[in-house]
Amino acid sequence: MIINCECGKKKFNIDSSLIPKEGRLLKCGSCSKIWHYTPFIETKNDEELDAIINENDVKKKVHSDEAINDENFKAINEELLSEDNADDKVEEYNIKEKKENDEKQEKIKMVLVYFIVVIFSLLGLILLLDTFKSYLISVFPIITPFLDSFYETLLDFKLFLKDLIN
Image (cartoon, rainbow, N blue to C red):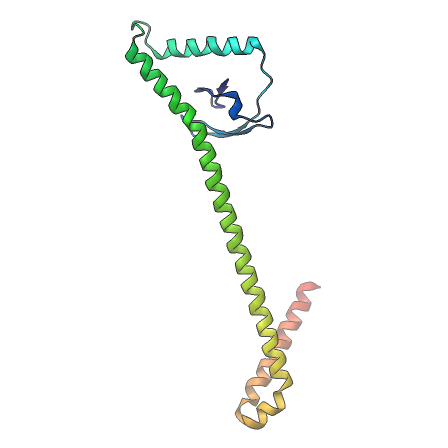
């Protein structure tokens, strides 16, 4: 099957079994453009056209004044094979991109989990300080102004959040 790059500069000969019916992402080996290709149902005429286009591509690659010899033919075949390998590179790129996205999502989840743990720890500390306030003041009388300013700060945060919501 012949696939044209969207830039219009390159044509690729790709085995039709490599592209599922729902299509897949392809990457041009020439311009590095990535696009989603959805195949159409081929008929015998399409296969004949593909063969003709392949022959025309080979003839265009060899200068008109040069005769087609084994060396030119091998060079052209190697170039076409490298274009087929571009499809494999696109698949590798997609796999790497998916892994990177999964890793980023995992990192974001871990940050959120740590944030939630810190919030709950602070709430637990506030609850403990409030519960044992009188005992702490009797053992450490110097802590009274710190606890008072701490409670005032909490009240300020509460008022700030209420204003934000309203």
